[in-house]
Image (tube, rainbow, N blue to C red; front, side, top):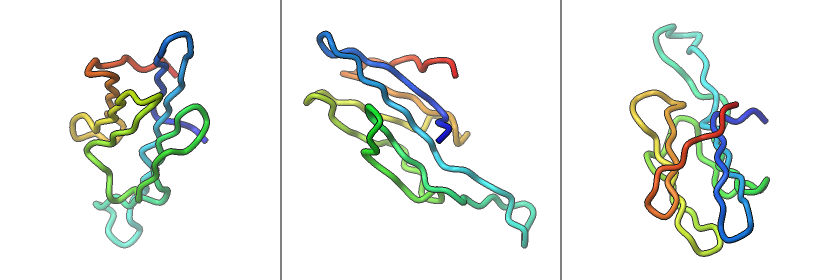
Length: 97
């Protein structure tokens, strides 16, 4: 799977990889001005899916815990792939992909 964004956070001596795919979209063949989502989105932590959603229901915010610490994925702005991740209240920069 190709992910839209990827982050690495460190808790103690252990690194955790967080990846997000907000789903794919296509143009509606019946109404060329509309976009349809044809693949569900997913949030993956250390290679395991922890949350999925229907591509047409993009959540504004998803909260999960890693080693009992809060991690929040947010949709930033109006663009589908505008994602931000915060860990313990700090914004984490994504890894260039």
